[in-house]
Image 1 (tube, rainbow, N blue to C red):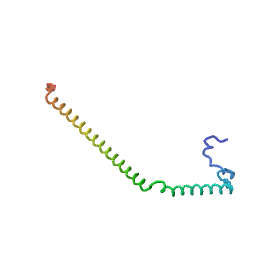
Image 2: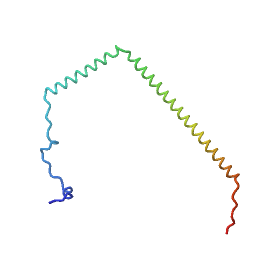
Image 3: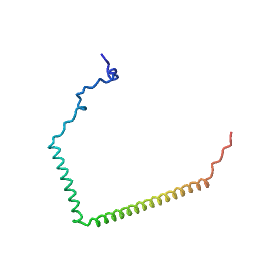
Image 4: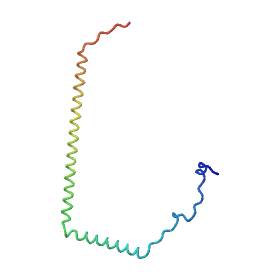
Length: 123
């Protein structure tokens, strides 16, 4: 009798050849292949026909140029907003630095003007 630990350490046995992994797949029926091929051709042809009719329905060049103009305008607005945000953050950092300097100056002045406690002679 083998313990569970020995069972784990044993080499795997030869797998039977009837495993599902090694089985050959069934080929699809000829009518299924023919049907999917015809459906793919019909779908692709319909899409191409619709794309060919598209320039007649709307001015494609105007659409593309408007899209590019809107994209550039949006990017410039985004950049301007980002620049303004960075400027506000820089001003806030400068203001915070000024407050820290003022506080440090007041503390040093108070320390300089405050009388020192008398030193006790070493014993």
